[in-house]
Image (cartoon, rainbow, N blue to C red; front, side, top):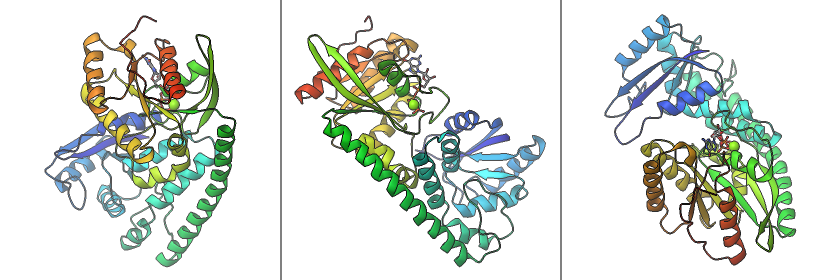
Length: 377
Ligand SMILES: Nc1nc2c(ncn2[C@@H]2O[C@H](COP(=O)(O)OP(=O)(O)OP(=O)(O)O)[C@@H](O)[C@H]2O)c(=O)[nH]1
Ligand SMILES: [Mg+2]
């Protein structure tokens, strides 16, 4: 689908156009252009200014654009208004959150993930029915949302509420099963180590390496959506030590609370763990590294404030010594006193060290020491 990424960039909020473009491409959008407007604040009706919207209209015609992808968050009313200006229902208009849900949709493999996504979509677009009726006739098929059609709003609302409670009930049943599974794991006495971190930081690559699996990696943002748990038997000198390693969904900056909440159970694996291995891709620009660590830290503070962390500074094979040093300093600044280890999950550099550090922590119950930067093992 030929598409354009549009963004109103305002002071103090970093641009998300790159991320949106990467996400869009990863699920098959053909992004042919970009339209960025720097503004003092978001325009109240269209997010971008009316002049810029005219420009967008020209561009969509000239370049035969079929989908307009906003890197900002759009309220429902704006989606419809923008669509009207651009020529109506032939042009798909979605915001960053709906794009995230589209990515999820494409990747979801399990019933639980599918239900979580449906719930997030229903809740995210719940109020849109009202907007739709107010601006009746503008909307066609909207992603993530099937409009109220000819029904009056009250009927639509009743229908949506019914579907939400149905999905919530189904999810509850699935959640109960996950909970039992988790309790079983615990009863067997194995500590739980959860992989966490920004999407595409290398969690599944590490998981595959350590448990000799071949789970998908690198398909683009949110490659992993379901939870996988495997037992790891680690030999530390004369000591044998086993734990359960858990891989699940990655984080993204500014995740909408509705979406986060829908993923409660999946994220619950992290909440209930005994140790978090927080993955950081250190090979990116410092500013991006900073933003991704901050976002991961914010989410962890919310979902697992009490679980100890080891920061895994990953992809060291892809960065210079200077970059690694600066990145490590950054990690120490954001996570003072939190142990870290530098590694390449892809090449297996220091993956054993991560396990050793985890072992040290779990077996003693005390905070592990930060490992020196050794890249030779
Ligand atoms: N060069 C290099 N690439 C790596 C390393 N670790 C992972 N990658 C690559 O980074 C990309 C993302 O890796 P994944 O393991 O899928 O990342 P993830 O954190 O599981 O991502 P999500 O499932 O989306 O949350 C893949 O293309 C990997 O090959 C590393 O140590 N070095
Ligand atoms: Mg993954």
